[in-house]
Image 1 (cartoon, rainbow, N blue to C red):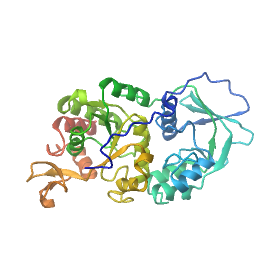
Image 2 (spheres, rainbow, N blue to C red):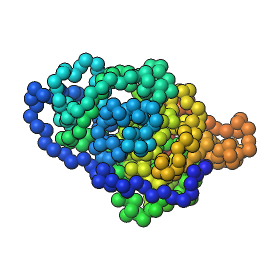
Image 3 (cartoon, one colour):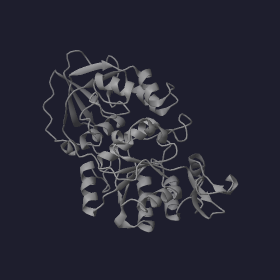
Image 4 (tube, one colour):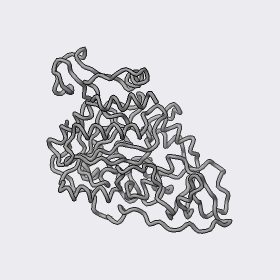
Amino acid sequence: MVHSKITPIEPTTAGIGELTTATVQPAEQIDDSFAVWECNPRQLADLEMIAIGAYSPLQTFMGYDNWISCIDSTHLVTGELWPIPITFQLPEGWLPKGKTKLRLVHLDRSIATIDIVERFKIALEVEAQSVYQTTSEEHPGVKALYKGGSTAVSGPITFHEIPRQYTEHEYLTPLEARQEFELRGWKTVIAFQTRNPIHRAHEYLHKVALELIDGLFLNPLVGLTKGDDVSAATRMKAYRVLLENYYPANRVVLGVYPAAMRYAGPKEAILHAISRKNYGCTHFIVGRDHAGVGDYYGTYAAQEIFDQFPQEEVGISIVRFEHSFFCKRCEQVVSKRTCPHDSNQHLVLSGTKVREMLSSGQELPSQFSRPEVAKVLIEAYKS
């Protein structure tokens, strides 16, 4: 584990009003100035992240100037570090000329209205190469980008309801998370994210971190993921049984991260860190192949990208962990930094192998997964 700084960094307090949940206003009657769009899951997730302040300083979808600045320099035009364009995409030619308002709906519910002040063309391949380091549609993030369309619109957003895809009790807005950390008296808070089921190597990272940090914010992503990823409901159930049996309740907060996965590797690691700064965290864990998919990124590229930016600009301490695994000789979870033994002593299960075992009803080794967690996963695969 490597700290970029041991001294805790104060979470963002400037513009704290931006971190309150957006004001909800009744939807006005639709007239000829409106176009109506049914939002897809990623658009809903982006709306939610903007509405609750998790994407602060963004208060709406990007216009052209911010889009090109983000692509070219990894910054907004106002100078803040920002790695991935957050745009509202539409198919080319879909939006008729003369429409000045876009009503965003989902399942016949009015979610928000964009007062259109700008529409522009997205250079999709340029964005794909900048964000995902590939233009191949085999990459799920690139595929979603291309499918979204090459027209983008921007302007002030009026919310008619706050889109909330996760309805269980483990839901905290950034402001609510800050209040919870303050209530607990935590001066330092480390955030951890995964879209995968929790296992013993994750637990190892958490508990090493808790030896140094006041509190742990388990912040699993529950927005849109790939079709073969384990469902958010199953992952949350696994988290609950793990916390009930193996973690000190006064040192951990479990709260969901409602963003959609983009699988952008290093660039997405920066976005995840900025978001956790907004949640009030002082530290963020970045492990092996964070936010990666396939072989598009180097094993530790998501850690190395933070070397390109001054610590003050990132605004949150990045805690870097190497790949962890169970060593049969050491009889515990270790990493290459702490274990001298050959790989034939290491128990490493790939995601594919885990899915195969779960699908066939096989029990996961106790060295890899706590039995309570394994039971949750096996039951989910049986159903």
